[in-house]
Length: 587
Ligand SMILES: Cc1cc2nc3c(=O)[nH]c(=O)nc-3n(C[C@H](O)[C@H](O)[C@H](O)COP(=O)(O)OP(=O)(O)OC[C@H]3O[C@@H](n4cnc5c(N)ncnc54)[C@H](O)[C@@H]3O)c2cc1C
Image 1 (tube, rainbow, N blue to C red):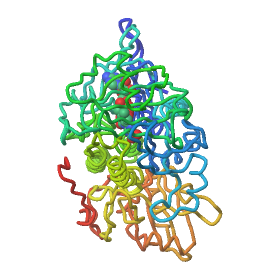
Image 2: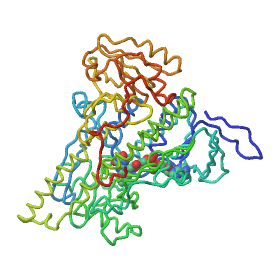
Image 3: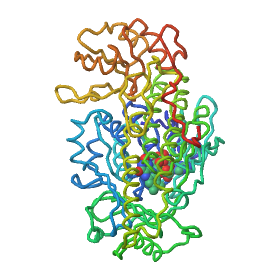
Image 4: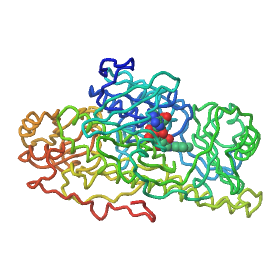
C-alpha cells in the first residue's frame, strides 16, 4: 500500500511510495512483480488506457521463461497464445501460398514441457522458449503485479514532470481522462517508458550505437497490420507454421500467428519511395495480398508503421535516483526477439537491488551495479539482433525466384540453403538467452576460470561467477532452479561439502536472507566445479569456492557493501575468448 499525506489546498493528497515506475509495458510490469513479491511499495503509471492492444513481441526466450518460473507463473504464460498443439515452426516462402523455401521445426507448447526434461548440452534448462504475443504476456504480468498488496498499477496516467533532490524523487502524474494531477514522492523513479522515453529525454541521456540501418528487409520503414484472416490456412500449400516469412522481389514480409486460429501480426518492408504513413485500408489489403500471393479475406484490427534498423543503447542507465530500463534504455531491430526479453531482464536485475537498498540491507552503491551489468548486456544483445537482421535482411530476392523454370528451381534451391542456415542462426539461440554474463561487475567475485566463447547458437554451461547457474534435473524430477531461494541461495554440493556456518552467521549479521541448499550428488559438485556456490536472487552465480572462510567479505562484496575484496581470487576483466566484436558494435 502506498501512503498518502493529508490534503492541502484542496489538492489530492501526495502519494508517498518507494518506487515510481513510468511505463506499464513488460519492463515496468515485471519490475512491479519483482518489487511487489518483496513487499516493496510501488506505483506504476502508464499513459495508455490498458496493456498493449497490438501483439508486439512474439517470442519469450527461455531465460525469460525461467524468470517467469521463478515468479511462479511460467505454466500460465505457456498456456497463452497458440493452442498447446499448434506448431511453432518458422517457415520461409516465396509468398505464403507459394513455394516453401525453408523451415525450422520447433516444439509445440505441449511438446516443450515434455522435451525439456530430456534435453542436454546447450538446452539443459528448466524452460524452453515460448511463442506468444506480448499483448497476452502483459495481461498476465499486470494481473500478477496488481495482486501484490504493495503495488498500485494505474493505466491512463502519464508522468509529466519529475525532480530528484538527492534524497527522493518528486513527480507529477496526470490522468488521461481529465481530473486533477497527482503529486508523488518516491525514493526512486524508473523510466520504463519505452522507445521515446520522457524520462531519458528529461535526464538528457543520449543514445549510443547506430540507427537508420538500411536493408532489403528489417532495415527501414515497416508497415504493420494486426488482422483477422480465418481463411488464411486454407490457401497454404504447405504445413502451417507459427511464423511465415515471404521472400520475393516485390515485397519482403513476415507474419506471426497470434492465436493459432484467425489472428495474425503482419509486417511488410516498404519499397524505396513508398510512404506508408498515409496508407489506407485498401493499401493494407493490397500489401497483404502481395505477401500471400492470392486474395484472402481479412479484417484489419489495427495498422501502422514502425522503423527497423536500430541498434541503440543509452549512454547512461542511471542519474542519481532515476533509472531507465527496457526500450527506454536500448532499442533493437526485432530479429532474434530480444527487445522485450532484454527489457524483462533489466527489471529482474533492478528489482532485487532496489528492494535490498530500500529495506536497508544494502547501500545505495549496490544500484550502481545495474548500469555496470545491464549496459554491456544491452550492447551485446543489440549486436546479436543486428547480426541476425543483416543475415535475413541483406538477402536480395531476384525475380527468377518465382519463375516456373529450371532457372527458377536453381534460384529456389539457393534461397532454400540460405534460409535454412539463417533460420538456425536466428531461432535456435541458447547462447544468446543463457550465455549473457556480468563479468566486470563490481558485485561479482570472479574466479578467473577460462570461459566458453560467447556464441549465439551454443551455450556451454559454466558456474564461473557472473553467469546463469548451470541447470540440472534432480533424481526426484525437480529442476535444480526450483530449489533456489527467492533471495540468496548457498549451494553446498557433493557428499562432503565444507561447513556453511560462516556464511550463515555472516548472512544473519548482514541481514541477508540466505538459504543453504545441500545436494550430495557428486555430479552437481562436478557441474559447478566447486562445493560452495552463491546464487543471487536473479539466479546469477555471484561467487563459488572451496571454503567459507571469506564469507563476510564475499557477502559484503556481492551486496555492494564493499567495492573490493582482496583475499579472494578475483578476475573481473572478461577473458579474451568472451569478447564479441561484431563490426559496428555500438560498444
Ligand atoms: C514488430 C515488432 C516485433 C517485436 N518482436 C519482438 C520479439 O519477438 N521479442 C522481443 O523480445 N521483442 C520484440 N519486440 C520489441 C518489444 O516489443 C519491446 O522491446 C518491448 O515492448 C519493450 O518493453 P518496455 O516495457 O521496455 O517498453 P514498452 O512496451 O514500449 O512500454 C512502455 C510503456 O510506457 C508508457 N509510457 C510512455 N511514456 C509514458 C509517460 N510519460 N508516462 C506514463 N507512461 C508512459 C507507454 O504507454 C508504454 O506502455 C518487437 C517490436 C516490434 C515493433
